[in-house]
Image 1 (spheres, rainbow, N blue to C red):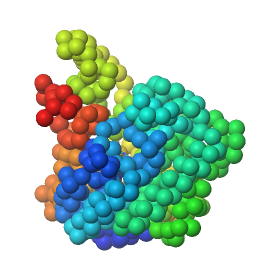
Image 2: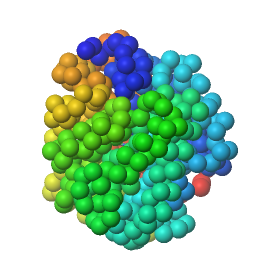
Image 3: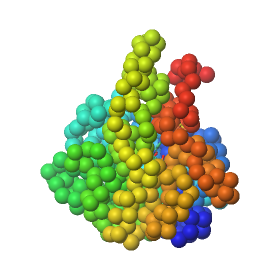
Image 4: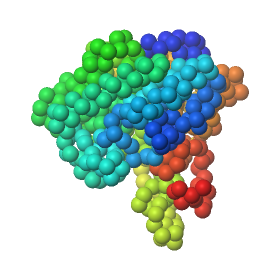
Length: 408
Ligand SMILES: Cc1cc2nc3c(=O)[nH]c(=O)nc-3n(C[C@H](O)[C@H](O)[C@H](O)COP(=O)(O)O)c2cc1C
Ligand code: SF4
């Protein structure tokens, strides 16, 4: 397999094997939660610059699955349909396919943000959003399944080339799959098949309505939770997903509770944390700066997950041995030589997030040979900006004074 070749990945015709991994852009239109013009322009630019395929940032399927991040996409308001159609049309006209990532935040949000008590497979707290979720009833499960199915139907109607179910990073479906989040005693918990039942029912229900429309998933093959995801268990999960008719698996890792595991970095981006994450961001200025100085002193002593590069490639190779569907791998991939090696070894595509935040025309640079490696310094500041503002690259620098929310 070649990195730069037209090919089929997960039943979708892609331009090359370099995929933009789903990235929350913080650019939904607040009035209908569909894409804004600015988001469309961002995607069109990537599409004009040789990206093989764009996986759209996560869009929420039910109002009670909303994110805590501002301006997150929603896939439930019919008023957003014209803008979704427009986005797809413009990205296609620029030459790239586009996949809609669909998610429900489960307990990885706050009840305050969604306006009702948040839900999860099991009543449980979240390290960063500590109000306790309520355990889902069988009726809740049916409703959420139907919301996912309706969203898949909508994605097809809007013209998306496929969907990706978000089974990763601690969101609701990850919580169902993992024994850490799922202690249910009914048919939705207790063994691998039961923990995957909700995903199976979504896929079976969707297939009745959309036929063989491409359905991908993103899976955290590993996380740092006790009784959580580990590669051998992820292999079992992948085999079942293949049996249920999934067309491609993007291999990722981590949960938001794991800190910097999904997107690794040498150090916590303390400046960005103290600028963008509550409650510390709203501390009185002097207290904010004093605690920031202390946090910076201890920061080098806080161990971070390793390795920092190519960190899901070993799991992807293990899963590849067990399934024949297409695999995509994300996480710390920055160098074209590594990308070529990964696809030569049988992984159908590489995907990246931070390299495209840093250089939205990264695929073009690689293709033309004007760059061989991403300029992203993996500082993770962009992962904090999203708590208050649209996603952007800060290249390790937080500029003070910050504007207050709502200020022009
Ligand atoms: C700002 C930001 C937003 C992200 N949004 C999403 C998202 O919407 N859906 C998702 O599955 N992963 C999301 N991620 C995780 C990335 O897709 C990716 O899995 C992770 O950053 C590792 O890839 P990288 O090393 O190429 O950045 C996000 C990461 C960042 C930094
Ligand atoms: S802020 Fe920029 S340099 Fe830092 S991780 Fe994000 S994209 Fe890379």
